[in-house]
Amino acid sequence: MPTAARLGAAALAGALLAGAAAAPALADTASPAPSTASAASSATPSSGVPAGLYGKGDPQYDGVWRQSLALIALRQEQVEPAEAAVQWLLGQQCEDGGWPSYRAEGTPCTPATEDTNATSMAVQALTALGGHQQPVTRATDWLRAHQNPDGSWAYNPGAPGDANSTAVVLNGLLAAGLDPAQVAVGGHSGWDGLASFQLGCATAADQRGAFLYQPAAGVPAAADTIASAQALLAAAGGHLPVTTTDRRDAPPKALACDGGQAAGPVAHADSAEADAAWLTARLAADGQRLLAKTPGSDTAAPAYDSTAWTVLGLVAAGHSAEAASAADWLAGNAFPWAAQGKDGTNPAATATLVLTARAAKLDPYNFGGANLVQLLIASGPAPKSAPAVGDPQATRAPGSAITEPDENSGFSAGWLIGVGLLVGVGAGLLLSLNRRRHKPASPADAPADGTSGDRPEQDR
Image (cartoon, rainbow, N blue to C red; front, side, top):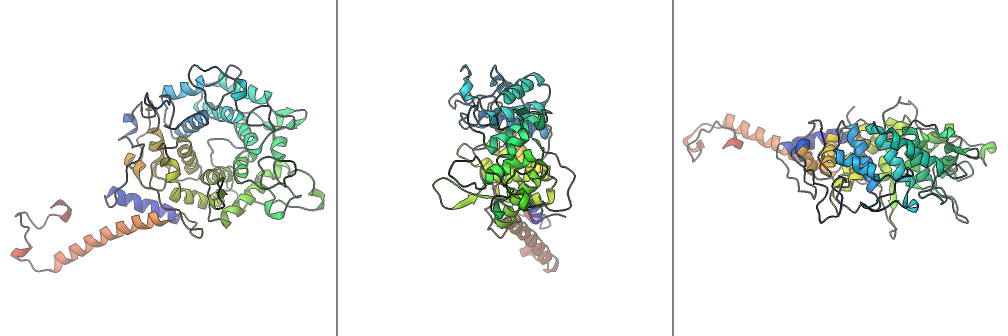
């Protein structure tokens, strides 16, 4: 059954196509069609951004991450990326198999700069593209060599593990066909490493099932929103891109606690359900989106990334019904996150939304009125081929306003404006036709230019 957000998207798209509303131009302007996207759209000599890279922003901290996400999302949508984009990613790999976040052309690899997150996302991208088994194997060997004694992974090898990095590494291993139960150090597997960050029965009831980022001496364990969101996909045994699974009829099952479970870690069999139950409760409490406080602020703001990862994890865990409202909220509100940053299109955010939309069975070619696939294509080198789907000009659609906490369907002010414009245009046409039928003909009815009064008003 269509939700309000889906109906609103259709109405607004119709209004835009009918010319009822004008859309502002963005820093990344859509090309007329995928086949005509500029090969140099992601870089100019003065920008310092490699021509094969998606996005215009400084790639120092996220070059490999955003490139990998973009390639995964485009491959999912049957877009064959430019060879330059694939070769750029392959060229970032170091001799030992790991990837840094980014290294400038000609800069040698430094082991201290290689990180598990970039490496694991690159593994998922190359696996999705196919035909790159050798670099994938070298990468998974590198990941296995840098597993911590407790089974976890750190962002940079040699540091204490954290939930986010461990989860992303498990995503990469699963994509490559490896069983985390068999990837172990000293008897501690990858699943054991992930379990070390999940809050169990020893914690307060309202935090059970969530994940903390990293334990710290003398600091009480507390749920971390983004850690819980990213951990869910791994706990559910999933990776990118997420494909829909058999739907579970019952909502996520909260962690059942009794006296005998108080001190032990959450069992792997219960991990995804417990995390999904905690995240679902947070979505329900905060208007079907997750909230987070930014550094230096006491006010919680919508956390688009965490919300998207939660949708991906819920779908992978079989809870697509619980993911639907959050996906609709993203459709109604996340366009500015994807397309209106200081550097224009954010390819990592746009790719994440493409993956989220498809997982939730929404249309990434018309996600809240925006063609996210075309937006992503236009942020990088022209692809070899792409299906002609959707309206390229929809990439310029304005994002809707953030909904109020009690408006959790994603049907926000932007949709109301679009629907109102569409209804107004229709009402005006009906009123004009009605007057024409009932008003007696007279010479005064003839247009001043002498043309026939039977022509439609829009053609006069």
